Length: 115
Length: 115
Image (cartoon, rainbow over all chains, first blue to last red; front, side, top):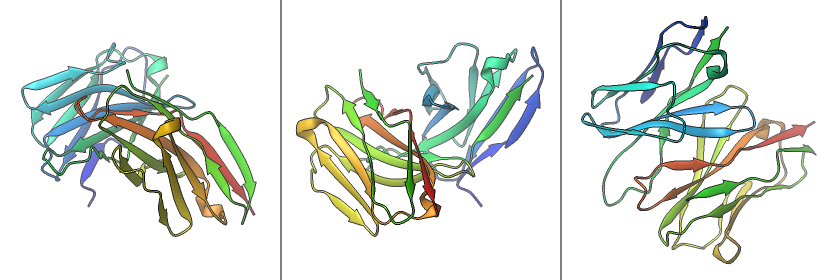
């Protein structure tokens, strides 16, 4: 089983619908991230969290919200989806410690299409 | 602010050719980490390498090699004797030591290796 699991892997929804992407991890990491990938734009950070009580906006947080339900779970919500939120979404985790080198561990991605 | 530039949007080579993917970064930190990730057509992100700012030693791993030059702020990636399975999007990324380890990605280079 993957250490970082995203559900759903694929979702097609309609404009105006609420959609939630879920991420769970078994790595025991405290830091979790949501990235969005668009063709030709690379990956851009939406939100990140250092623990259950610490949520931070990334560079493109407008139109999104997150919830850190537990150390192992970090959900991304689109309250009212719009077509330009069609993208591939990645969850990632990172541990903390003096030996850490900043590497992120990514989930397999969730492909969202908003019609 | 940190920035990563991958000037090559797409590269197409014939199998067995050598190919170099360029990466130029900007940062004000003296402590930072550089990464390369591979994204094959299946969509997942595969970690290839990380390098910290205090280690300019080049690295070779099989057909892959990396050239880190702080003087030119570059971290280039070379594939020797390319193979069709190397076809993917390759991302260079930067994490500053004091920035809560958010990864900033370049826009990626699509490498196509033709038989």
